[in-house]
Length: 175
Image (cartoon, rainbow, N blue to C red; front, side, top):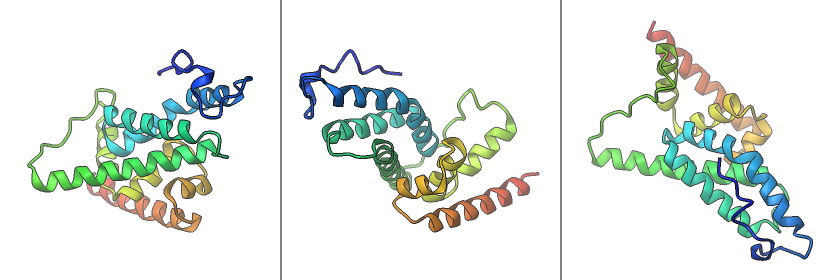
């Protein structure tokens, strides 16, 4: 995890005062949320390098607006999920135009059941996949998932139900 304390000086932050309260709060948010947001982005995009880039971009935007953002966690979840959705859409478009071999499973996913589950999750539509990742990996409540995806809590329930049904169907067909 990148520690931002050494690269930020209080005078560089737009909301910096002589007490540097805003900078310390930003650093706390960064250090608390960075790794979990990268994990969510990695599972949504399937790429660790892209996940780190997307999360860094979200933090850069938050840094510029930190003095006006009242709920940084919600802002970051929404920003990361928006970036992940755009990234996945670009990849889908690229795949239509280029022949591409399926990505190799990361070494940590060596269990055949885990690989089958992750492959099934990867085949879900982007919003369903995002809802599943946010609910079961990030352990977010439906209200927070709705805020991150920009939809209503009822839509989150529907996305999760459809995703679970699709996953159950695919995983049971493989048995």
